[in-house]
Length: 185
Image (cartoon, rainbow, N blue to C red; front, side):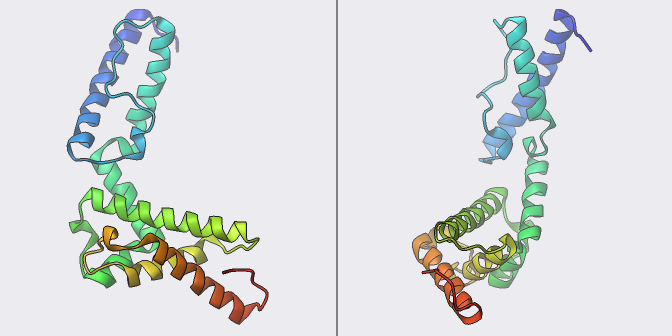
C-alpha cells in the first residue's frame, strides 16, 4: 500500500510517539532490551526527506513490533530463556527464590552471563577441534553456575576465568573417561 506524504507523516508520528514511550519506560527501568540495538535515542521525523521517512518508518515499525520493546515482553522473553536453558532451576535450587521475584535486570544479567559462558566454552572447543552439542555445553555451564554463584546468584562474585576453567576441565575429564581421544585442556 502506497501512502501519501500526509498519511506517512501521520502514521510515523503515531509510531514515533508509541516507540518513544516504550524507550522511556525501558530506560527508566534500566532494561537493556535486545530491541534497543540500533535504535536512536529518540524517534523523530522532523526535517526528513520522504526517503528518510520511509526508512525511519520501517525502523520504528520493527521496534514497535518487537516483543522486547515492552517491559512485559522483555520479562516474558527472558522467562522463556530461563525455562529453556534450565537457569530457572539453578536459581530455585541455589536460592529458593522464585524467578518471578527477580527484577528484569537480574534476569537479563543472569541469561547474558550464561550465554557468554556457553559461547566461550563453544569457542574453546571449536579451537581445539572438539564439539559438544549445545545442550551438553548448557548442562556444564548450568552446573558450574550452581556451584560458583553465591546464595543470592551474585554474578559479580563469580570469577569468570575460574568458572570457565572449571567447565573446560570437567568436559575434558568426561571426554577422557568416555572417548579417550579428546584434545581438551
